[in-house]
Length: 256
Ligand code: ADP
Image 1 (cartoon, rainbow, N blue to C red):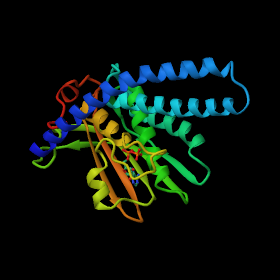
Image 2 (image 1 turned 90 degrees about the horizontal axis):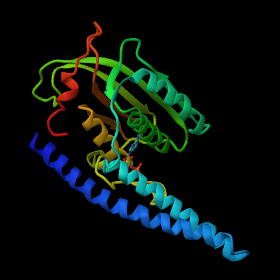
Image 3 (image 1 turned 180 degrees about the vertical axis):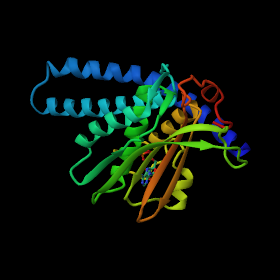
């Protein structure tokens, strides 16, 4: 537990630092983009092509700082009771249109209840990050399965979550898998094995933060050459008899 909390503290201070830099950077990028637009109206020929390049780089930098700001949790979010099943169904439908021809995206929503207390945009972000990572792990194609179900946790010394009922979100792929070295570091901010124009190393750090804030946990199983499965547990927001069940959401697990 102590190792987990020092890790959480490290992530938090990194987040604050990154958030501060991202905020100032964003303002400077807005100025660069403004002047590039302003010049675009006056410049023709080769200069115009260069301006397009400047614009593209600045746009990419802007999307990076946007990710940093989310990671640093500068953006306040509203929490509501939402159906994880619905989020998963809608998000996979949308993602399957953009994921590429050689990757099959399968959605397996639970038949039971999966109401959780969370922010819709953040749940979408979790799914987007996990599914895009799965796709990146399968350059020669494969299958991604996104599923939900619910589980009951009892008292366990090894489990960092309080007892109760949880919604489980699972994202599995048939991709390249990870070595133990990568698996050890994958939630660290800025850790990436992708080329610098593709990976930021912020995707899973963001997912880790969102899940922790919602009182949940994330785990991963991975075998090199076989595939990877991410499992996220989030406290169920409503008991099966329909009564609101706030305790689980209000008491986040230790060390997150
Ligand atoms: P990024 O995608 O920008 O690299 P992430 O934090 O999302 O940042 O992921 C960190 C690293 O974890 C990736 O670079 C990759 O090496 C590894 N990874 C994440 N998801 C998977 C997966 N589904 N299969 C294999 N490796 C993965």
